[in-house]
Amino acid sequence: MAAPTTLFQRHIGIDYSGAGAPESRLPGIRVFESSPLLPPHEVRFGHHWSRRELAQWLSHEINSQGPAIIGIDHGFSFPLAYMEKYNLGPTWGDLLIDFTTHWPTAALGARVSDIRKGSGAARLGSPRWKRLCEYRSGSAKSVFHFGVPGSVAHSTHAGIPWLHNFRTLFASSIHFWPFDNWAPRPGVSVIAEIYPSLWKSRYPRPDLTGDQLDAFATSSWLRDADISGELSAAFHPNLTSHERVQAGLEGWILGVY
Image 1 (cartoon, rainbow, N blue to C red):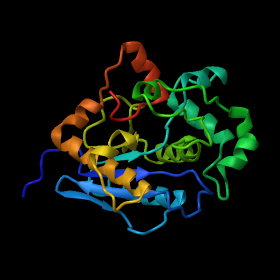
Image 2: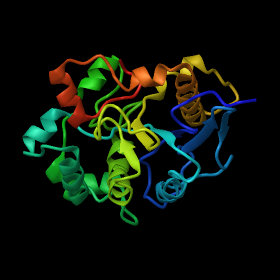
Image 3: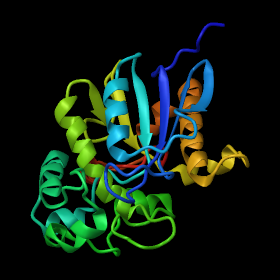
Image 4: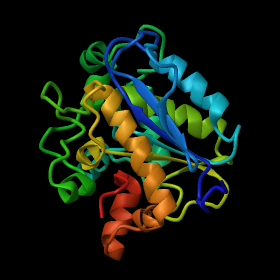
């Protein structure tokens, strides 16, 4: 059977976790992968990934078998209020450099909770601050809202330094959406922020854990949306020119229109 015409050859959904240290093996990190001809399957079924190991796997996988779209479940940037408070900008790259200086959460043994009380105290945000995409989604929590069910604060603060590493290593071969442009470059792998709650009800799987379902639903939607053409529309949410500039710095959740 011929493969349908799609933008990507692989569709990878990652449910992330900010628990422990970068080398800690965590049941909360799950990876599912699909392709136009193959439904989602769990990568290394039953395996407990660490954030460091996941980054190494992604470094090997990116562009190794054709362009992939990779959806990761944590915030990629911060609200405009954060940039203004700490006089950051005018680009996402400026935020990445400043954040990794104060929050070196990719370092061996580093824990978000410890850094939050140490060097990270110089760069704290408020749970009252939300990005435009979080307001638009209607239910996504602030990236600074620690210690509540459904929080992405730990995973965001643990994950952003790895994005900085990828951007440094693969600047020409990865499109970080939407920071590198709202229209991804053809033939290049894309890394995008996702929010699995948008799609979980579409893909019920009672045999999966919550973390597995988040990654499965993400891979499923990315694949289905790519085949149907919805993914092309998702890359261009309905934003005013002013909102587009703001979201180009704050980031956007793929699938929020």
